[in-house]
Image (cartoon, rainbow, N blue to C red; front, side):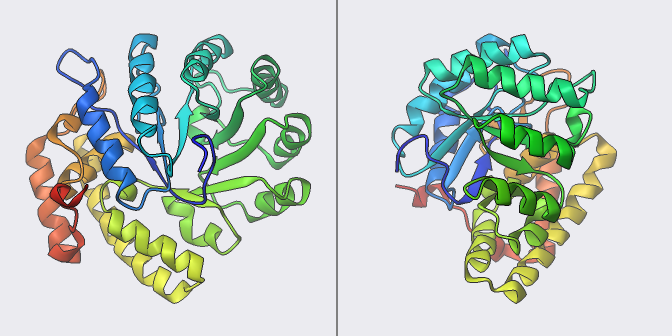
Length: 316
């Protein structure tokens, strides 16, 4: 498989390990990539929401992409993407140039935040990236955290005007959108997220991005196997287990956990993440190891100890 292919299946959007001085721990990142590559991940990407793209400076971003691309050469069967989200077009282009310099072609790109873009500004943003870096393949990360969801009308214009856009990570149920885009571009790649996995799977998605891939890989692997077999009864059974996990996630929100920080907490509780992943970039809170112990107990109580099957010693 070419390094810059976009395989179907499970994509791990991994968190970053930071030292006390907020520099990258490269060895911990390599270990996590290696674990994901040997535990059900068909693709791995860095610098997404959980990867703290919003908090990194260019020095940190460069260090992450360098280590990521080096390690991914050891796993040519696994696809890769790099998120280049930023606060402006200028900042996005700086990150795009860095990622490109390390040989990355698949770019996950959300809209700039803070000031919500108009329809024309959305078209200008993606068209500018495509015009200046035409060799890149863009996977649009359509998420409300950017200030808005891209409308069907704008999506249609993007598909027709920006051929560099080859896929999308869709964070909401969008059957009409999927049908519309596939009519215009049958080869377009759709990736669901955890909360839309079941509804979108029955419409023919290409994969899923989920925190389960680096916390409970056996569970997400079973769910993807059910999708491929179109075994929806089996999928619903596994989805019920995921809902129990979300009850645990909801319970810790009152303590300041949210977004990617909760994902770190769950990965630490399962044992898939090393303790260094408890740190987040300021000002976002770190994970309290006492909470890790509580969440682990809660997972075992709701799902049984057999769900925690990961063992680092089993990885070649």
